[in-house]
Image (tube, rainbow, N blue to C red):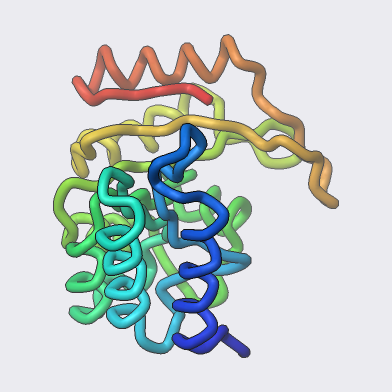
Length: 199
């Protein structure tokens, strides 16, 4: 697996500062660590976070630093220390049952929802991002939602972000319509007492 070097990352951040200077109306409002895959797999996640935070402090002092992660490596202290230095931690939880998680997320190693949630609970002040779909895999049934909501109540995140797919994948899945996403968000707010937003 090839990753960009820290030199390449710092150079890219410097170029971004030229493209999006902080005194312009289109200045960056957040620097988000994400990727085509899991960003916490980066060999030195701490150094990466330091580079992003330093760039924010130097070029965009009002921007937030954010990471999008599946949370599978949160059992590692170095990953937790790195994420703690960011302003916002957005972690994925799409399923309430092991079977649904296997179908939706296809983890490469054996992982249960319980073990994932235990890892998510190791980090303070997290947001949960959850994707809902229909078709050959459907996590919007009453039973699936009840199981998922149980984990949300246990985690008590600062926010739940609810969304669906934008493009149809290779497998026959369908997006969930906006009103249904809003219904799920409203249910989270009413039952869990947690802020929830449908996108």
